[in-house]
Length: 323
Image 1 (cartoon, helix red, strand yellow):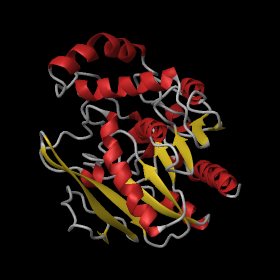
Image 2 (cartoon, helix red, strand yellow; image 1 turned 90 degrees about the vertical axis):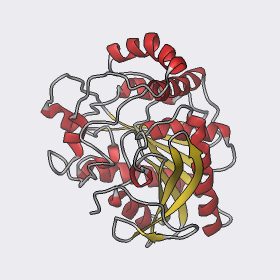
Image 3 (tube, one colour; image 1 turned 90 degrees about the horizontal axis):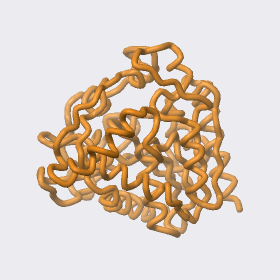
Image 4 (cartoon, one colour; image 1 turned 45 degrees about the horizontal axis):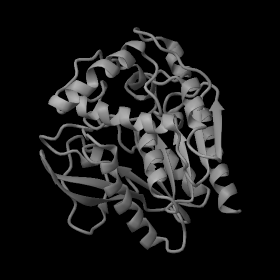
């Protein structure tokens, strides 16, 4: 695997991806205070059918080739989007993952869906999104009715949860920092528990790019946290997403300041009960599917568990495609 940062692909061109059998295409997004910004659309070349677009979570990127293969087996063309300043889209001197308004992601999501619809005229893509990407996708779907056929959220981060100290810290400190110096890094404890659960170097099965999915998450900046809190507020007030929503979670969470083998069979990042409670506020057609022993990334869980998640995902999408 290529273990450095990538450069933009030539304009309007698909080039071979770092994952065999995949291609990637740069989506230019102009400039911000750190320079030129772009996102990256990834395509599974062997797939055909009704398209799905995958969005990753925080400190993450698309690497799950088994999800792409499962989509293909169920008759879906598979695409994934590495958002600006993540994964394939991260460039030198950029602040990894930083954004101060989640609505800015509308640009790359819109550009990606426009390209997908050109390749698949007459069909509405579905979006599958994980964790922070699930929050982004839910807000995007609320703001863009009629653009997709379905939404699948894999352990979406819909509320500040899991750690009381972080909730209190965010409510009292994040807003002043955001107003005075949004790029300032917040001094927070860092844990590698979820990384240990998924990385082939530890207890998991996935070969992860050390810069794109580091052991410890990206530094959190005040402006980014303020943007997340604003998104959580909108979800708490209730959304009206116009398409069916499937939310996948583990059946249990396990939080601790020390690593435990229990984290191999639970969500060690989010409170699954709080996620399920908040998910039903997304729209009128919401289903919550809890999967025993799943990890925070349900699709990265051990093979029998992720296969159950794949089956649930594409059975759900196929049902509504057939209506």
